Image (cartoon, rainbow, N blue to C red; front, side):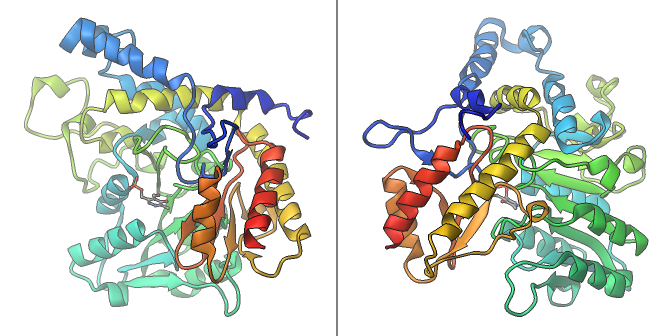
Length: 409
Ligand SMILES: Cc1ncc(COP(=O)(O)O)c(C=O)c1O
């Protein structure tokens, strides 16, 4: 399978961490921190050089002038998430963007103040949601609805989510769902959620931290109001890299939307006239606050170039096969000490498999990491692994299962 893989050569474009004996690790942690593209250094060095040689003039005369630097990422990002260019902007970090979006789009009233989230949503999202509810004078105890899996199941059924929206939609101000749940790896039926929300007049937002660069997205067509994501996981932008934000075109010129403003969201034609009245730019760019962190954005350009070459559809095709192979090998071991909680249906998962290991899973994860077999542990009992189609191989999957099962035994 590796010999026949049309994307196999992309692995050479990344640094693969080594084991103690100097061989390539099995790196199944791209759902947490993607690997470094070898070209990232040159992108950073270019900006350091321009800064050294030009100082402040780099804003206008750097090889890639810094003033509009964030736009170098716009088109590729839009393609990757299925959006129009004006609908996306690369800025801030995920939780900051989530707050900025909620300030504009969570507008609770006495009769419609609830936020629907999935149970087991990422803690930062839960904190953000609850703090927004309190900020508006409501109580999370009565304003958060958490949808749970059915008794005895690990993942939430899309039909249950739709039914809940249908039943309680009139009281829901915002549906805020992780497109791919961080703990289970479940992919939600985003077009169905967006459609159900629209029917009931709810605002719909997605956290795509585990979806961007993992599965194909069609945000414009699906029609959520907004989406946010980070770039350090499947997008390989480096630790703490700048996040991304989508605002649907239908909001691009809603000048009256309340928003927390900063000068980088101000009409750029007059930005440097230093006027005191804020005039937002059209589209997602109108939510920017600050001038962009050039050196943090540079490595993301390296990665997005690689994504553009590989193409998300081809990556998805390999991903389905690679994750399927990993699952096939794991199930073939017939060990009863673990279970896979990620759905088996291909449309309900991306690259990640979440393996539930009651008992000593944490120690097992630590020992495997010391051997150069990388997954990560999420309390209370989940070992997450992600064979990433851009740089992982079928042989990685084979080696992983050998090491994992030996450790379990
Ligand atoms: C689903 C999800 N939401 C939010 C975050 C928080 O991201 P940030 O630290 O960039 O705000 C993460 C980080 O891993 C995440 O996985």
